[in-house]
Figure 1: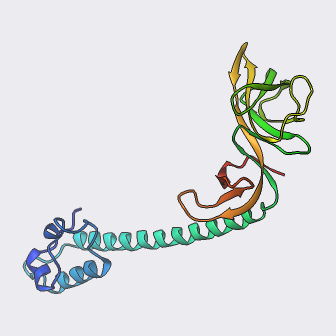
Figure 2: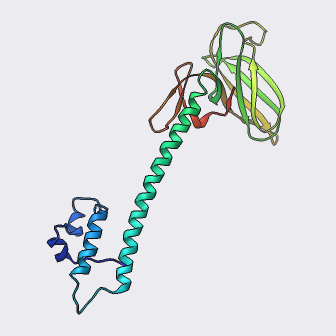
Figure 3: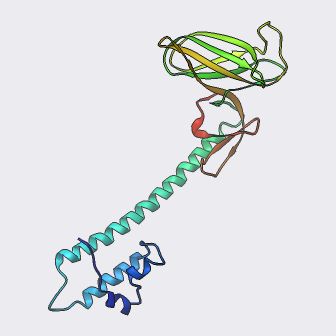
Amino acid sequence: MEVVFDTRLMQELGIADPKARERRRPKDTLGQEDFLKLMTTQLRMQSPLQPLENGQFLAQMAQFSSVKGIQELTASFAKLADALAAARALQAAAMVGREVTVPGSVLELESRGGARGAVDVPASSGQVVVRVLDASGQLIRRLELGSRPAGLTSFSWDGTDEAGEPVAPGTYRFEAQARIDGQMQALEGYRLARVRAVALGGEEGVRLVLANGDQVSLAKVRQIF
């Protein structure tokens, strides 16, 4: 049932006509106090010959209760969101100093030791191959991972080329493929990086600051070491 208030009554109470408001304000600018004031005054000033019907009165009360309930529910959700954000921040803070697996096909080769990465295999495969490339795209090393089940598969590179000679430390990238249903398919790559700090705010909320300065959303972390 549509609730209709008398325009003359609204003017006497100093409440603007909703139709006039629509030209300069949003449609939801009639607050709870205005609504309650209109309803109680309308009851007090109703015509004895045409009293307000019980059904219409109940409809107005239900509409008022609904508006109040929605506002209280919105406030409760806001408090819940704040609590979840605080919990996520504490969870992210515990990752500082740890290594995580995040999307990316980058291998950081240091002066000592090798580099590690991971690939996401969508289905069980009898052949998974990783190709390590330099900045110009030249092949440095081919890694045969053999048969792998579906899921995230880690690999390591010892920092040598195809001839077994050590290469210079620096940033390399990799490409991966898996044979699935008789065809080679490209795989999504993941890199291992150390968490240096935690950043808050922005559209993504809690973000991890990696050792090289890159930032990644907490939701994108696949593994924590």
